[in-house]
Length: 389
Image 1: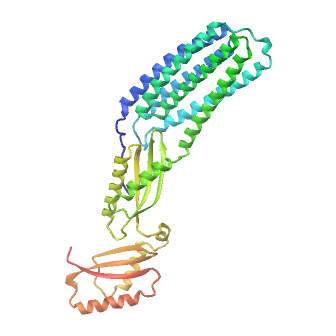
Image 2 (image 1 turned 180 degrees about the vertical axis):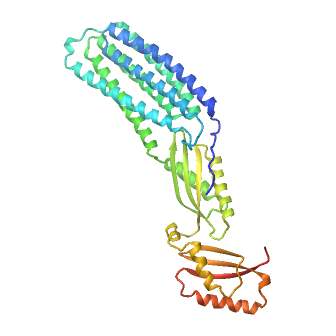
Image 3 (image 1 turned 45 degrees about the vertical axis):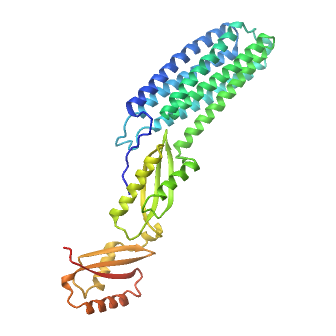
């Protein structure tokens, strides 16, 4: 019970503004990575540095990730529609999974190639100093790019931008390994250039597995962490009218989350009052937990197991049985059924003008109690008088 609406994160741009910021940051990343890719591959080939060439290939993978970010940020900015009622945020998640998978392949390939070349170290040409200076420039450029991207990603709370920034930081760290490897090769330990390439491949592989696993957990609806769930639970339980909470489920949706909750209320309140409590609970969660995109609140009567309700007769069946039990009475104005404790309690409302003798009315109530004593479902029938039309 409860309607679904979006929730704008406090301090986080949304829609077109968020997309524009992400696009601008990513295009800057594209420019830096394109420049470093060309520079590393060309200089690495001319200077006989396998680690620099491998790092250039890694920079090329950065370009791939940048274009994935551009595509995903544009697609995820589209509003919800009939085919995607929760929006398009998980386009970012799918792109993160693709990015992680590409890093796994690139890292594994570099490891394999380095291992093959290490078997023939004596055939390697000497590394030149130009490779060393390009590697140093790469460390500086990648670290600067990381700091810029992580700042933008945290502002937008974009998992994909943050993932791309982490990728860039890994690239800066691996470039530092390349600096050490090339430096060792220049000092006479030629094999260190290949060792550096192998270490870089392992780092890329590890980062790819981390990103892919995080995205995969979201795609299989992994919930929020225990601290976040407990905080949401306390918010729901503190809502006026809520007597308990017996089921709370969460699942991630890119940079936000969806929540389903079963809250317990007084079993005898009206449907409209129960709806009000559900709506109040939903609004409180959205207001106090900006990471939550939407909340679906289901109302349960206090102390009533869900399974017990489905085994009880329907309203139409019970009304047929009541027609026999109430044949001595005028036609009721209204009948209210309460499915409680594995049975049904009935409230019958009669026109007060149809009652001439209160004593006879009370005697009728006593007879009704006797009639239902052995009834398998109906536990109590309460007669009420009303003047309402």
